[in-house]
Length: 423
Length: 159
Ligand SMILES: Cc1cc2nc3c(=O)[nH]c(=O)nc-3n(C[C@H](O)[C@H](O)[C@H](O)COP(=O)(O)O)c2cc1C
Ligand code: SF4
Ligand code: FES
Image (cartoon, rainbow over all chains, first blue to last red; front, top):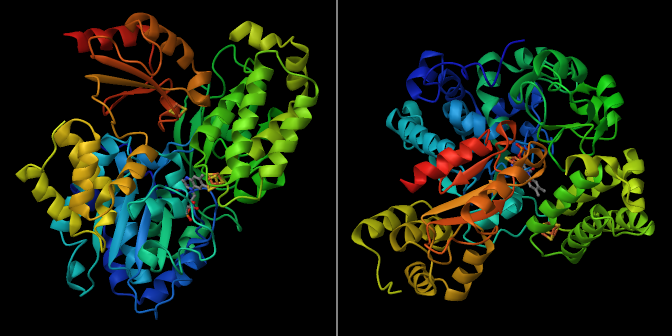
């Protein structure tokens, strides 16, 4: 497989402009500036590139929604707020190859006719933030950003904007509110950002990894990109693998690659003494897959969806048999209740209540009805809120109980062997 | 705390930041970072100064400062230890690291040592799940933690 996103990751000084240029960097931007914006959008549409931030929305289509006749400026906002538990791929791009993303940002900005692009980076990031800032400076100095980019007459400013610690700001409309200097509250949609986003103007929000794939597509064409992956899920995807496996880390995988093969051959399977029980394939909010399902599934949108889960961000959390699923779910319920922005009562109350119920279940103080109660809370908060954070807990609740009900029952009875053993 | 004006260096930074956005308010998060760097933490007086500088209400600034977890609202410890406690780190033994730190520093999570040198916090996923357990001390990430590694780090900080 040809690597689209990580080909420079192992090179020394891969984060510098010098290395990026030496390996052909910014040739795609030159090419793009000689094309019509519409042609670029068509190319990205034809490539079938889907958003890598979690929702999987087709990138070219999103760009084509931007109205060009409103008289208002158009903005690009880059989502580098990576915070979904289990996900650590954008941080790697920013640390190891920030110019690839910047080149994608400039091409996307040109395609949607944006004059300003903001990169909203997670406040906790340290090395990645400094490398990104340095890369932006280098890009300005070489005329890849700013006025009259590469002599084309096209101007576009590029700014890095640091967050300040709030998971919810990864949700695209919360991100826009945060960029405007507000609390990071998600907005009601519609209007969608493409029509009315930042400063009430048309705005495209894209994930770091999505944009980092764009230079390849422009340089090599949609057809070359489509040659990689499956018919419906073209290209490559980054997976960040965590848990007690031999080689946790970041992998660029051709879409459609069998998950079993991936975990065996690439990741090196489980650490000695650990038995695979389950895998969360796409960040902590996604439904869990059982070890049996891991055998049967391929790493692409359709195959994972056929097992009732989602590819999401590609944050792959591998869970071994010593881990109690009640304990795991309690941990996630704590996360989502802590991160709920509190605007919608079903989410604010539902995530907090789920956490409380799970907490007492974990400590052997629950009744049998609590299992049904959890499912009920989950169901009642899903789909009824401004953003999908409520669903992000509802989905694990339904799938953990659905697939590992015996472990929840053991907790109700007060005889979980796992919790006695490990915790 | 007195915070009547920004230093010249901070003011220069703020002027540059303001060129980046079509509204003054949009510079609020970055200006708060500048303010925190200059004054050490964001006391009510600092919020008022920022509000005045950006022509927004102090209440708005207060609302924003309290929404985001990273702004320091009180005098910070010299070393703020933030250990990730989310599922991937939990599976890889962050509980042991947190217990170890509690015993070593003689404080609970959320507390500061009496001499003001250390604060211990548990935080959510730091996007270091593949190198779990992970923590941040002030701005810097430390990954693949073991108890021995934590001992070494604390010893280094104590020098
Ligand atoms: C609670 C929540 C958190 C999110 N966090 C992120 C994030 O950290 N990074 C990201 O790219 N997308 C995140 N998203 C998805 C964004 O809303 C949005 O779909 C994405 O940035 C669009 O970019 P893409 O189409 O290129 O994927 C989050 C969504 C929700 C509901
Ligand atoms: S669903 Fe939750 S996080 Fe999303 S807007 Fe509502 S309260 Fe906030
Ligand atoms: S869970 Fe600890 S860094 Fe992600």
